[in-house]
Image 1: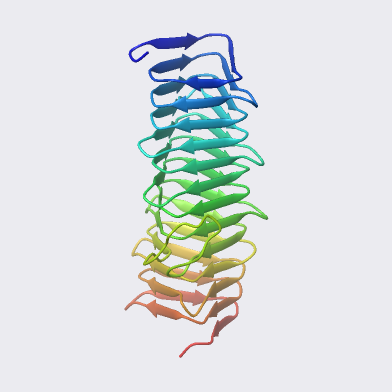
Image 2 (image 1 turned 120 degrees about the vertical axis):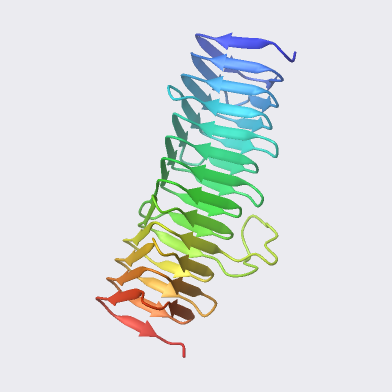
Length: 276
């Protein structure tokens, strides 16, 4: 019932359908087992261990507190109206999928070994550390206020808006693509009229594999971009530079690069311009 609180201090295992319309305060071991389904229009307050082995659907508040560990091993849906707030450690395991359709805030550590999808009209605000170890697809809005790092052999795709603030760093060691206008996608998201946009006020460092810009990158007056491996601006891509870009590896421009008055592009390796 609404207004009630379930306090778990030990082990609580869910095998069937569990609907939480009120509050769960977990200071023990809460497990959604393989055949279980959690539907949460209420509040789950996790302060120790919450493991999802099946499906967790939330339209309410899913709060992983500073002492909490939230481990998703299957499907976690933060649906419209929901709030996913991580103050502890959130692990999206290998083979698992986290779908965000609402508000997602990270105030500590996300370990992304599975797939994370930020859908259109949803937001991810990263205030601490986001590790991308497999797949991150952004169809909505990501705001990075601290650190995003993507590791070898993973896929990081931006279809909509990615903002890197002045105090923040994005380090890529993977295949990164900033998508073009009306890009097709494997999730059948309608992106009509939407271009991949990166607004950089902080630091972007590309270390490994290929960084492809098919959309729009704006490097603001506090922003720096450094490529230590292959960087491609395609025919649909644009970069506007209002501070500093450092080319330390192969850089190919087939689109449009605007270096604004008094700003700097330092070329230490091969820069190939195939456009006029």
